[in-house]
Length: 369
Ligand code: MRU
Image (cartoon, rainbow, N blue to C red; front, side):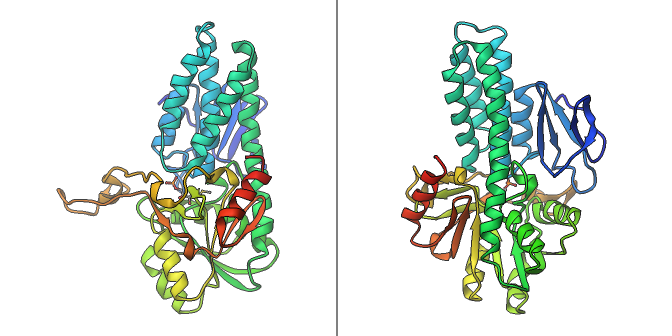
């Protein structure tokens, strides 16, 4: 990957990549044909911004989880399509759309479970097909990708407002994985709710599961919440039941990678276990996601494609081997939580309650999907 190191805590500015301190945390920026993204594999030790000039490098960054979280992957995919269009426009005047479609297919296949990547690529390709010539299409695509990111942050702020209404005063709130600004266009879904409820004085303590295999909870959620001075306690995934039984948790809230029409939710592996534990302990289990994560083409979670990742994510913690060699490993990145465990799904269109079919369809329609 062609990438360069960008100074700590800085983002894209007028004169390059190191001049302006980020106003609010965003995991990805576009400037003059370059994508800058905060390398999430290096957090929390180092804040390293990668500067990518080729859409293939963006695809690789998505696969390697340098950028991750379904909505953020969608934004990265959109910028990748704009980059690919710019490259193709330089040589393929006659078959611009045909060549761009090939690149779009590679981009769309970078990670399979999250709905937002395919959604964003489809939206970008519709814009490309509307352009009368390649150069005008490229300009329209750059604007569309930025719009996808801005709309996502706006949706998350609305999700934060709707979701905060569900949180009771003085709550301990448990979350899983990272569903914050790092995982989205900006602000966050589940962490958007937590940030808004915290600002409103409703949350006493946030609990973040470590989230094996890759520790998105302890590395990323703790880093993001600390950055905003929100009080966070990290626990091993296996400690969630004990924490609930001790009465420290009043609500569980997570993001989503894909939501089926009936309200079944694919999210980071371990989500299903938390939902079952929440039910056993009579705690509400909430899901926060933009409508771009809802896949109305799937009647249930049964047919959501679940990504299986390399065993080394389990056999190693960082560079240290923690499993004997030649041991079989189970490493599904996501699981599906049946809708019966989900007390509410919060989108930018409001709070959906069971039965979900009609309410999710209404939310998608209200958001123009
Ligand atoms: O494998 P990842 O880190 O991309 O998985 C991310 C998650 O499961 C998030 O919790 C989910 O995408 C919601 S992001 C707002």
